[in-house]
Length: 151
Length: 193
Image 1 (spheres, one colour):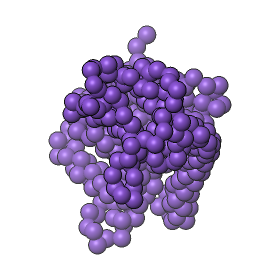
Image 2 (cartoon, chains in turn green, orange):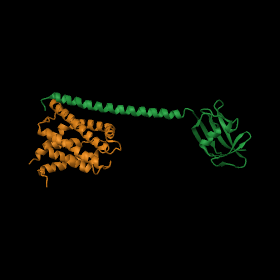
Image 3 (cartoon, rainbow over the protein chains, first blue to last red):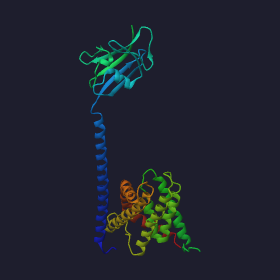
Image 4 (cartoon, rainbow over the protein chains, first blue to last red):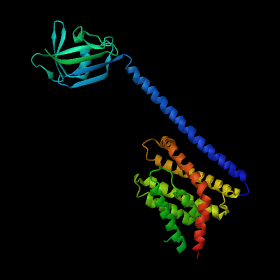
């Protein structure tokens, strides 16, 4: 055994071959795995191609405020349908559009109303909703709020 | 029917000591998966005491460590590992029997010492390669896939563990093989019959 150093040199090279073979197979498999994950992620993203993201605040008027950031809604949705996806609503249909009477069971107190606002990024303040909530078509990145207000 | 292993008291004592060393070191290194001194100890046992004691050390170690294992007990894996571990004892015994000489010199300036280390390292690597191949194929029978695909899945998913096992064993055999064989060999001689 000791007389033939070349056997040991060959054996050492074989060890290196085994290690490189292992690494090649392992990284090839990893490559396949991540390619598949990437394809799945792309497919998943395709679903959201026709969606926009909006941020909605609900202020219950008693100090409780909940943010629903990055709420995904189909392109062309109005604020009413967007709110429907994040909260339970009671509402009435009037001459000028939908009037929300309660959000998540909060509403109906005397002289209290649910008013909606839109964030004005130029003036850095909340503006009153210009139309009824179901008449306002959302844009990607809109920041809106529902505030339970006493008059 | 009885199997006569013809083991002397000295051999029995050696097997017991080496087995407890293997089991103890295995539990100590439990947190590092597939990196264990056990394989080297089993090889050394085979080299110093012969094929049967070496194989017995490997088998008995797995009999304890495989049964009382915090990672769980699987009968098929238990058989595969217990029998595959004997490979190190068998190889150690055959190396000694067929004239594989481990350097007597423990001087780090001696070329013979490093050559002996390298040979042991290579041997440790290949023995571990065979061990991993057998145990990975055995674990394929626990995968709910058709056999050829299950074997491929088991072998590929076992690559990181096999790499850790084989490289660590190369290092252990390379760094400690010659030293252990000489040191334990001298202890055996001192306590000789």
